[in-house]
Length: 304
Image (cartoon, rainbow, N blue to C red; front, side, top):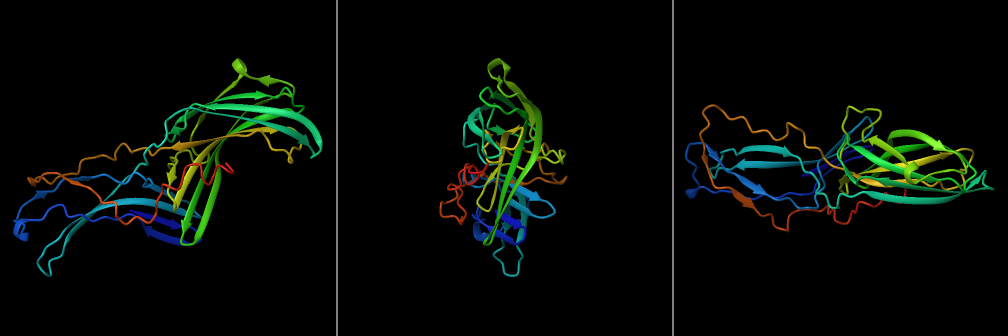
């Protein structure tokens, strides 16, 4: 299992490796024939999910491979080797539930003129989605104590990617989707039955044909997503903190429809199939990147 980083510096790290013999022939001699050795194993629950990101300026990936080797005890006999990449989805570690947040802010114009306060409350239907899903938001705004119009609201999808290579860290924060809805006049409100209902499809607005990469909670490659409700007030309120709502959401990995396909067999394939082997990895495996101290809310929620 390997993480690969390339930006202004490069690095690779094999952070999980285990080798287990699954069968030894009696007398260490394999008769001529065809053989199948089924095996299964369970991965550590804190491994980061498979991931691939690449653009003109940076790239990062986490890949997993299972390798098989048929080794001869006779000298000068080469081993038969093969490997197969497989995809790892991070387990859902939270309940799939709705989210609710509220924010009230006192506003000043031109750094000195008090313009009252504005309250924003929003509901998000879930905290876990698949790429391309539609998130349902409900927005309540109480601008009755404010003397500034809200020209419009922007519903934004933010992607925050952290790449670590050697001793260098690159943080890439992008607003990848913006949806605008009408605002509200000063001294008025939209609450209760007058609340705004908004549907937003989770995709990259510039390149919608490319599916979003999933949330990844690794320490070398870490990617998070945030839905933000951002009111745009009239006038200059640069010295005031706006009542912005931010929801952290998890994008799950979508298994491709053609991923689970049986391997093609040659026409004369008639092997001897052995009993399945259950591999129980010991806890002393090589794993120098532990993910249990990288919680989903760190280190991003201070800003997003």
